[in-house]
Picture 1 (tube, rainbow, N blue to C red):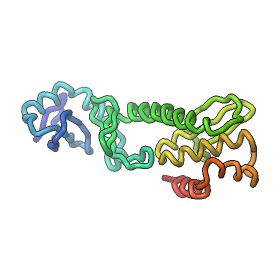
Picture 2 (spheres, rainbow, N blue to C red; picture 1 turned 120 degrees about the horizontal axis):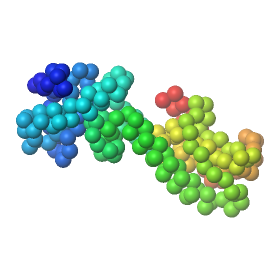
Picture 3 (cartoon, helix red, strand yellow; picture 1 turned 180 degrees about the vertical axis):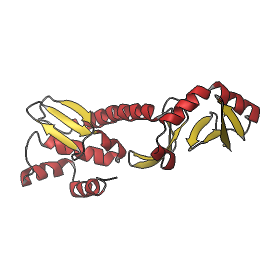
Picture 4 (cartoon, rainbow, N blue to C red; picture 1 turned 90 degrees about the vertical axis):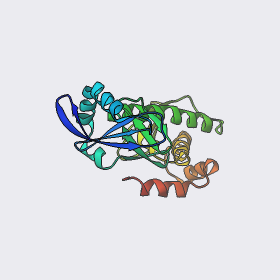
Length: 212
């Protein structure tokens, strides 16, 4: 069917599923509407017209790359991204439903903070001689983590949120061990092995996924 969206005719495809909410997604110039079996065509048209400005803004904000490849890894599992222009970002099985790419970025940053801090607190309990330090999170292009003893900070790459929790744990342990050995000597790796025996496998997995 075709619906007039703020004076512009747009092709609308309706996909029905056993779900409670209604989702909107642009596929080039076609609006995909995912809804339950009980929503009538008239109700769908009314919702589109009511949210016409939001839907047009969603179309402008949706990059072409997102239209063709809406996938992202989250904690080691592949998730499909669906932009609906309305919802707050949330997980739905193997999907991440979000208003737009900006809200998705906020969601991922928040998850980085919650998950990285949680894993750090859990792993710190295994160490008996750690100094006081603070955690920083930022996107880095060449390193998964950094330990800086002059500023007493551990920095984790925000891209780690895409990796399995076991790999996040490895990077944290790696950086915590640098408080004892600020190098990659045999003594350092012996220290890492005490807390993470499979560090060689973890390093290989991170190297292989560096460009994912």
